Structures are given as C-alpha cells and as structure tokens.
Image (cartoon, rainbow, N blue to C red; front, side):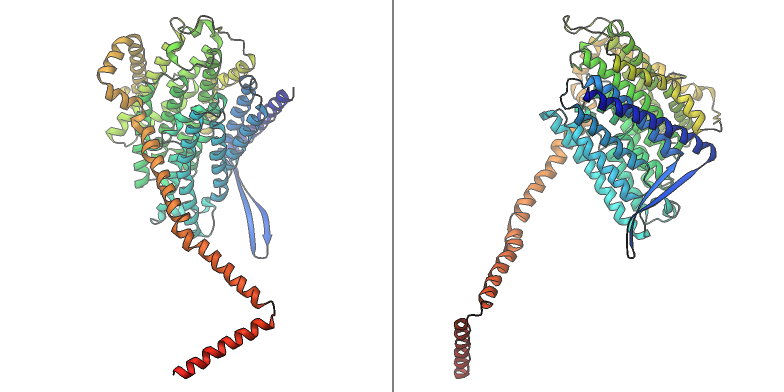
Length: 578
C-alpha cells in the first residue's frame, strides 16, 4: 500500500499541476504576458547571487505537457514496475528527472540552465543503468560520456558570456545576432544541443539508452532529455538566422532524419525502432528550426511528445505480455489478442506518419508545406520528403510484423488486455494524440497560416506517405525476397542497419581511445613524474624544513652553542684561506 500511495500521490499532484499550468499558459497567450522573476538568494556587501525565472506562454505550455506525460508515466509504472522491490527509488529518480527538466525550461540564465542540463544527464545515467547488467552499464556510459561533450560546450559558453557582464542570455540575443565575434556562443550552444538531441555524429547513444525501463523511455524520448537541446535552440533562435552554423546544422539534422529512417527499416527490436523514429523526428524539429520557423519546431515538439509517449507505453504493454521479449519477428496477430493496446498503438503510429486530423498531421504537414514554400536547396528538399516516406515505411512494416498474421511466440504464453492501470494511462494519451494537434494549432497559431502552393506540391506530402506505406507493406510481405537481396549486399545492409557505423565509431573508435589516452596521461603525469617532482617533492621538502624548524624552536642551549661554534670555524677557515 505504501508503494501504491507514492505512485498515486505523485500522479495526482503532477496531473493537477499540469492542468493549472496549461490554463495559465492559455491566459498568457491570450494577454501576451511574460513574467520575469528575480530571486535574490544571497546578498553580502556588494556581492549578490540572483536566481532568475522566466514564465511565458512557451515555458508554461511545455511544463504542462512534461508534467502531464510524466504523471501518466508514473501511474503506468505502478503496474509495469510492480515486481520491482525498489519502486520507491524508481519513482524518486523519475521525479528528480522531471524537476531537472522544469529547472531547464524556466531558466533564462545559463548557470541555472547548466544545473538542469547536468541534472538531466546525471539522472538519465542512473535510469539507464537501472537494471544493473553489462548492457545497461555500457549504454549508460555511452549516454553519459556523449552528453558530457555538450556539458563542456555549455560551460565554455558560460565563460564566454562573461564578456557581457551577465549570464541572462535573453538580454543580449539581439546584440549577439549583430556581433560576428559572438557567434562563438552560438556555435557552443548548437554543439550542446546536438549532443543532447542526438544529432549526427552524436546519434549512437539514443538507441543505446533503450536499456532503461520502458516507462523511462516513454518519458525520456518524448518530452524531456532529447527535447532539451531543441528547446534550448528555440530559446536561442535569434542567433540561428542566416549564419554558417545554422546551415551546417540544417544539413546534419536532415542527414540524421534520413539515417534514422533507413536504420529503422532494418531493425527488429521494437523499442529501438521507436527510438530511431524519435531520432528522425528530432532531426525534423532541428532542421525546420534552422530555417527560422521556431514556432513550428516548438509545435511539432509538443505534438510529437504526445504520440511518442503513447507509442512507448503501448510497446511496454506488448513487451510485458510477450514475457519481456522485444523481437518483432516473434510477434504477430496482436490485434486479435490485445485489441485495445493494438488500437492505441495504431493510432500513435498513424499520428507519427501524419495521418490527416491526428495530432502529428497538424505539425508535420505544416512543416513540409513550409519547406515546399521556402527557399531550400534540392538535397534538403529531397531529404525532407524521402525521410517522411521512410517514416511511413517503417511504421507499416512494424504494424505488419506485430499486428497481422499468426503469433510466432510460445503457444504457452498468455496474451491479454487486462493491465487496467497501464490501459488507463494509455487511454489518456490516446485522446491527446487524437485531439492535441488541432487544439495546439488553434492556441499557438491564433492567426491562420495560409500557404498557397501548386496542386502537385500540396499533394506531395500525402503522395509520399502513401508510397512509403505501400513500400513498407510490400517489403514486409515479400520478406524472403528482401532478405535474399539484403544478404547479397550484406556490407551495404550492415552499414545502413547500424546507423552508418556510428555506435562502433563512438565506442571502439572514439570514446575508448580517449579513455585510453586519459589513463596514460593519468599514469605518466598525475601518478608519474609530475607527482614525484610536484606534490610529493613539495610535501617532502615541507616535512624536512618543518622538522628543522621544530628542532630550532626547542630552545636547546647546546644546539645553539654547537651551531655558533660551527659557523665561527667556517668563518675562521675562510679568513685564513683568503
């Protein structure tokens, strides 16, 4: 009962706070309010430490979404993690994670952003290694070390911000935009955002983080950790207008979207397919943000959070019923045995594909129409639309393998839809995945956006989605032919299916080499000659001099007499010699 009450209390309190913040965000949008709070923590003579908080419509609505999803995830965890003896510890870690995200969202100050940023990194490491096995440990180390690169970039940006006299970046964005030297800060912030949001070449940690429990994946990969980088860049959007850094990021984000879409079509792990789809959507957000549409990026960030959390929850319920098995080749016929879970899963999948009038459609279709409307080169245009087709392709492939046909798992395993606590959480997100997009589009874009395009460009998105879905079905249906072709071109298949070798480069080729160099430096410098001639030598000399000083301060007349005679003899000998 004690465990139950902790989950229930956390769920109710976060849910009510989410509703309150959502209504506050509506009031702020309607009246165009911004509240900037400065809290003086310490004041001593002329020195004062001030904590600053920013409340505007963007931070309030994002906080309400994060709290809504986290409350449902905690409620879901009550049943999913029921066999865990340390469920209290799990809930506390999730709450610490959410608190770090809240601090990051409402901070207009780089120092307090770093506190939330590092809090996310530390708690995500604790959650990834939660099951305490070798795979989890390796995934946790990859996650932590990849994110440390971004943390260092943020620290360097904080140091560079000293040029302005304050760390409240909001005051200086307009000035920074016109100051060419200060594009260094923009570069550092972009690097930090790329590591946290797993853009190329830092993409390998995101699928590896699937070693965490599924409720954590639902929270991390929808609205918290991976979206922190996108949110930070949305706040710094003024710096990304017409600069070299934004052009480079646009290309990398498009390539990330393309790479993850290709990789998901070769993947058979249910959670990794959904993780790669998260990576694809992060690339979409980053790329449209680089083109100057920060409101669109934020809109897609919110709608994506809804259906991606639902997708992970459904995947968790399926894995739970399949006796902790994640291979989609062993699934099949789930729509007959788990109809309610399958319905939620299919709705989330269709929202991801951009099915008209579901939440993903309102943001994704608008983004692609803006791309068609914008001045963008052929490569980026191709990558946008081809990646959208790949999204539909792997979604239909996933549905084909898991929902249709016969069950390929053990006949003694019972599949049912009786996990009522998990189903209640999923039903809450189901409603939001259906109605959330239209509701948010009315809120955020209170002036209707009219985009006039030729008929073939207007229908391009729908056409690409249909072609992608058809290809996904055909590839799965004629599976033997596809597998034979894959084995004939094994090297190409291996390259595309392993995220362009990024996990191997990151682990064996990059992080391990740097760790080896660090160990050598530690042995030769810190524990080697630097220690001998530095700290240890200094300690030895101080000990000897203090011992001599102690002898001299004992006030012994014999010592003074002997010393006096000794020095007199030396002076006498010198006088005779010279």
